[in-house]
Image 1 (cartoon, chains in turn orange, cyan):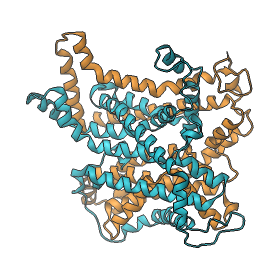
Image 2: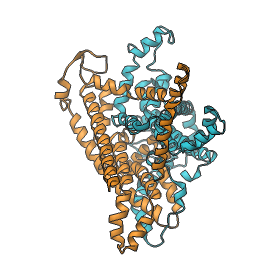
Image 3: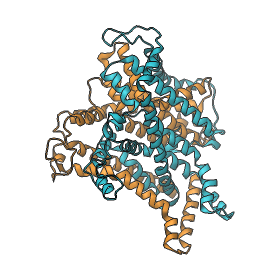
Image 4: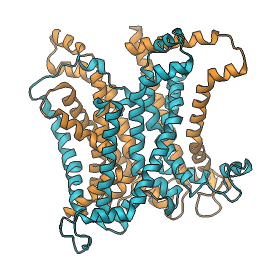
Amino acid sequence: MATATTAQVARTVERAEPAAPRRSPLRWLSDHIVIIIGVLVLIYIFVPIGYIFALSFNQPAGRSATAEFDSFTWNNWKTICEPAGLCDSLRLSFAVSITATILATILGTLMAFALVRHSFRGRGASNLVIFLPMATPEVVMGASLLAMFVGLSLDSLLGFTTIVIAHVMFCLSFVVVTVKARLIGMDQRLEQAAMDLYANEWQTFRLITLPLAMPGIVAAAMLAFSLSFDDFIVTNFTAGQSITFPLFVYGAKLKDFPPQLFVVGTLMFFISFIFVIGGEIWRRRNARIAAAR
Amino acid sequence: MTTAGLVTPPAAHVDGAVARRRGWGWLLIVPGMLWLAVFFLFPTVQLFFTSLYDPSGSYINGYSMTWHFANYVDALKDSWNLFVRSFAYAGAATLICLFLGYPLAYAIAFKAGRWKNVMLVLVIAPFFTSFLLRTMSWRTILSDNGFVVSTLKFLHILPPDGRLLATSVAVIAGLTYNFLPFMTLPLYAALDKVDPRLIEAAGDLYAGPLTGFRRVTLPLSLPGVVSGTLLCFIPACGDYINAELLGTPKQYMVGNRIQAAFLTEQNYPLAACLSVILMAIVVVMVVFYIRRAGTEDLV
C-alpha cells in the first residue's frame, strides 16, 4: 500500500515539474542531466548486445568469428547445432539449471520460512552461514569443492551430479535472502484473519500464505536459474569432463570461435526479454483485474 | 549484503510486527542447512587443512599433513602483487560502477515516470546473455582496429601506437560492465523507497537541489550503496575471466593464479593457501565495511 502512495506522489511531482518555465538551454540541461546520464549508461549496457546480434549474421572469412564483420548471412541461424557439442552443452546447461533451481528454491524457501516465522536457538549463526557463501569469491568455492571431491575419491562422480551440488550450494543463499525479504514485508494479519474465519493451518497456508509469498519465490527461482545457467567459475572446477554452455564458450575461445555462439547469445537475450515483458504484462493484467473487483 | 535489495529491500518497520512461533517449525531449516554444511562449510574447513599440507607432495603421490604454516609465507611471496592488483582493480571497478549506477538508478526511481518498469527491464535483460559472450564481444569492441580505439586516437586521447585491449583499462572496464547490474538494482531498490515529499520538503526549507541531494536523498539511499558496492566488489575480487580475456598475464589477478595452481599445476597446497588468504581478506573487509556503514542488520 505504502508503495502505491509513493508512486502516486511521484507521479504528481512529475506532472508538476514541466509546468515550471524553461528559462534557458542550460536550465533544461540541469533539469534533465540525470535522465541523460541514465540513458547513456543504458546505451553502454547495450553495446555488446548489439555486437553479439550483428555478429550472429556474420559470415567469417576465416574459421574463427571474433574478427570484424565480413559478409551478411542467415546461415548461422539455420545451423545452430552444427558446431560439434554446442547443442549438447546447451542441453546439459538446461538440465543442470532446472534441477539446481528446483532444489535451491525448495530448500531456500523452507529456510526462509523457518527464519522469518519461527524462533529457535542459533538463528544468528544460521544467518551467518547463509551469508558466508555470498561473501566468498567463486574461485574459492569452486576450489574447495573440487578439493573435497578429489579428497574423498569421488572423481568418478564429477559431472552432472557435482555441478548440481555446487549450483544449489551457491544459489541457496540468494533464494533465502529474496524469499525472506518478501515474507518480512507480508501482512501477517491476513493469515490471522483466515484462521479467525475457521481455515485450518493447511488451508491458510495454501490459500493465503503461499499465494502471498509467490512473487518472492518466483523472483528467487528466476535469480537462481540465471545464476546457475551463466555460471562459469564454479562449474569449471566441478564439471570434470562434462561441458556446459559457458564451458563450451570458454573452450571455443581457445580454438576457433563458431559464429553460431552469437546466435545462441542473441536468442538467450530475446527469450529472456520476452519472459520478463510477458511477466510484466501478466502482472499488470492481474493488478487491473484486482482493481476492478 | 542483500539481494533482498533486488526485489524488496528489508522493511525494518514491519520486522517488529512479525510474530515468531515456537515449536517444531524451525526444522524447516534443517535440509538447507545440511546442504550448506556438507557442501560449503566442510569443504572450506578442509581447504584450510589442505593449505597446511607438506608442499613436497603431489596430486599423484598424495600429500601428508604437516601443519606447514610456512606455505602461507611462500604463497604471499609468490603472489602478493596479485592480491594488490586484484583489490585495486575490483575497487576501481566498484567505484566506476557506483558513479554509473547511481545516476541510472536515480533516473529510474525519480525521473522515468511511466517508463520505470521498461527501464528496469532494459537494465536487467542484457545480463541474461552469457557472461562469457559479452566479455568476448568487449574483446572485439576494444580491439586494436575497433572503432573505440580509432576514435580515441583521432581525438588524441590515445597515442598513435596506444591500445586498449590487453591493458589494465580494458580489464577494469570489463569488470565494471559485468557487475554494473549488481550495483544498479540495490541502489534502485533503496532510492525507490525514498519518499519524494522529503526531497520536496528540503526544497521548501530553502535547500538547493544539490544540498537537498546531499542531506536527504544520499543518506537515505546509503543501504543501497552498501549492498551495491559489496555485491560488486566481492565477485570482482575473485574474477579471472576479465583478466584472462581482456588482459595479458601482466594484468592477471589472484583468481587466475588460484585457477592455474589448482587445475593446471595441481599444486593444491599453494592454491588452497591463496584461496584462504583471499577469502579471509574479503570477509574481514566486508565485516569491517558493514560495521562502519552501520547496517549490521543486513548480515
